[in-house]
Image 1 (cartoon, rainbow, N blue to C red):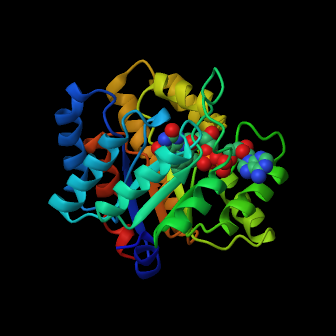
Image 2 (image 1 turned 90 degrees about the vertical axis):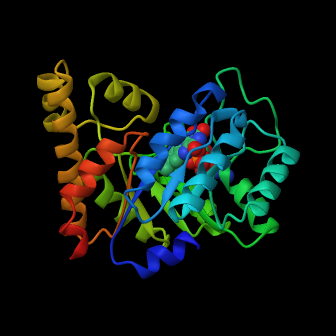
Image 3 (image 1 turned 180 degrees about the vertical axis):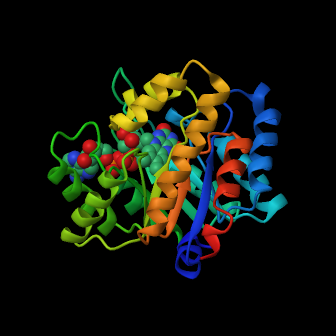
Length: 287
Ligand code: FAD
């Protein structure tokens, strides 16, 4: 089933993201936790793609297992900047052969020593290629606070418009910790005539190291209120986990109260955290 049909049909959606193992030795344990997330029966699940594509088979295997065993619709990710056209076309054939209806189309981060290939520069080129290959529902990334490489938000949103016009069905945001950033972004999308559904990406932060790593990678701002929570509880793992789940839940409640319909939780292969958030929202998701 296409994710866009799920988004259009359901009033509110709660979806979860998992990631594949980096090494084959960890495949079984990672598959196990992704199954535990799938058992929660989210609206759908996304499965990330390892940078460089070296673990691409794992993405498809994890996604297939979730779909076939739990009946949960899946969104395998695909990146392009470190791949040749031939690599990407081969992956698209595999995605098609496995009966996937959805692809999250991404450029991927440029490796520190520069991209090894010159076939793709932006996600929009991958999207054009996917469109030419079959009838997929295509998701793409967006950045409420601007993408780290783009110095001007207006330029970033013009690039986003080009990407959406290449054939995107829905967007998922980078994590944000301040809902005001997201609401401002929605206004800018509308001003730029970007009208596809936008899933709010929420990252539950459950330890201090995770926060500094995520912020360093994404450039996401951390509001004082959240910084104080991490300062106070960061050295107390159980307390930080509880506070992180509560903070993420409060963000989601505020979003839904303001008519944001689609929430994507970066559940990071942690079924307990996904379950806690889902439980916190059990009645709210019914309204
Ligand atoms: P693009 O949309 O191509 O944008 C990249 C940069 O190029 C931006 O600064 C944009 O403004 C600029 N740009 C775009 N088009 C043009 C143009 N025509 N001219 C000039 N500049 C342009 N990474 C992974 O490796 N695996 C994953 O599974 C993965 N999943 C993700 C899921 C989500 C929801 C998000 C938000 C990110 C994910 N990432 C993943 C990270 C992503 O690959 C990086 O953020 C990457 O740096 C940008 O990817 P993109 O698809 O947004 O790129």
